[in-house]
Image (cartoon, rainbow, N blue to C red):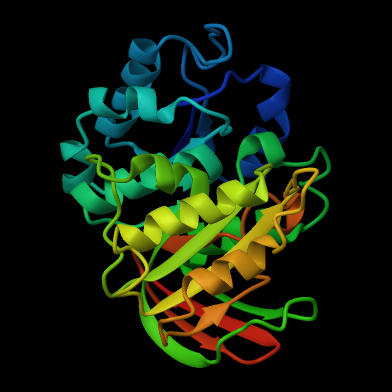
Length: 303
């Protein structure tokens, strides 16, 4: 699935609507890497908040899945809406002819569904909406790590954990699954629910109330999603909210307490999720080695 100069990649909009100006910088960046970039007809359609009707979004995505020349499908942005079109898409061609599906946040629906039904890797990574205008001149961690995975198929990250003394030390090796906690919670019991047994789980979230983080972690725990893990990576818990009467625990403390009964390594302060240009690319469904110390975590992936 590694890319090379001259390969064709395509932009997709499976959720919230997107404008030409919001993807312009990413097209320039991808072209600077030697890639050909397809901007499909209808990409900028709008149906209230979404990028066209459910049927139209699914139709456009299906064409990219079916097109053997397209080597990677890069989702333009998240928001909400992928779950509304997922059951209209036939992923059989993707299983027969794998290609990267790239994105995070609402794209967790695609990661989870493809991992369950196709058994091929996907890429949790930055999206065109997040690419800065000067990305061709500045090697931001988010865009540079995306390039590295797409072209080289390997990453090595070392994250220092200075703020949260909650790491549970240890080493583990397994495929990574997961993504956005709110989305994973919404998929429980559906055809897109993830299998976490023997996997490393990645969690991140944005703009949630702390009591809701607790509700979602309790749901994952009661559904058996936390028990059989090999390890847990906790990415950014960005812009959390509290009530007038405080919940009494941070998002990190809520996650720590939810997995307190289990013995696998847990790493906080991992640079994945809604953190702008710091959001590192991480292949999902690929054997990954994680080493967790009390104040740091190292992550190695080779495809």
